[in-house]
Amino acid sequence: MIVEQVDDEATGDWYVQVWLRDDNTYQLEFRDGTAAEHYQTRTISQEKVIVALSGWAKERPGWKVAFMWNNIGASFETPTDPAAVCGRQGQ
View 1 (cartoon, one colour):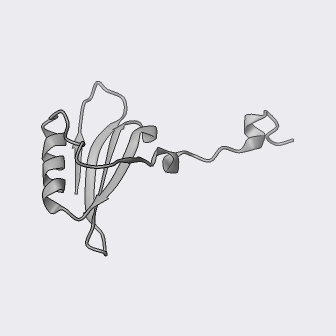
View 2 (spheres, one colour):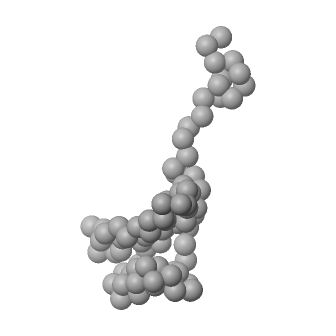
């Protein structure tokens, strides 16, 4: 499930998502505007997931404190061609 916050005047993506994995754990993620601010956690507690999703949607402070979050933003970075960075592309 994905819950997205839409603001036509803001640049970026704000959403929270969850899915039940094959090992019966919940993978919960949220993005806070940019790919660099994308976080992930896992839990076995359906109740904690429901509280987190509801808290995020209602913008409640402290909705994420029940979890230890890992920033996984680096996995969304686009690989850069070193030659292009040095200005030697096509040489």
